[in-house]
Amino acid sequence: MLALVAVLALVAAAPVPDDELRTAVHELRTDEAVRPIDLARSVVELRTEEHRGTETTLTLSADVLFAFDSAELTAIARRQIADVAGRLADSVTPVRVDGYTDSFGTPAYNVILSQRRASAVADLLRPAAPAGVLVSARGHGSADPIARNTLPDGSDDPAGRAINRRVTITFGDQ
Image (spheres, one colour):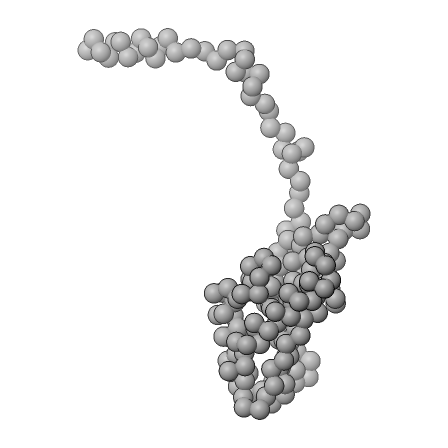
């Protein structure tokens, strides 16, 4: 019982924060510290599909397929490409794999990186293509952007750059 009284006395005598501590705590002004995010522009589709006549073009986000500055396919990429490979069984036309980067880096380096990425995808697709059907790979670097890489004021546009980092696979449906 005596111990309980001693503990209660210590708790009651706990120090009150002094002025120095109060001045060290700042009010958070979220209206000044947090910038709004345009979620519609920040979400990048991982895979899109477009049909033109008997031709299908699949566009895969390079951010899902590859790590930064790499042409080594991720595990998720291998599953995505295996799914695409299953669709090539009926293709009688050449299969075209095109790689693209954003505008970061030199144009020459981006062409090389996009070629390595397109080749990595094509290498996985070749065994699934019917006999005699050519699977080609071509890197375009930052040419042919489908979104802006910079904002009108010249600042970086990460959402646009993410859209431009892609690999397309084009094949005939018949």
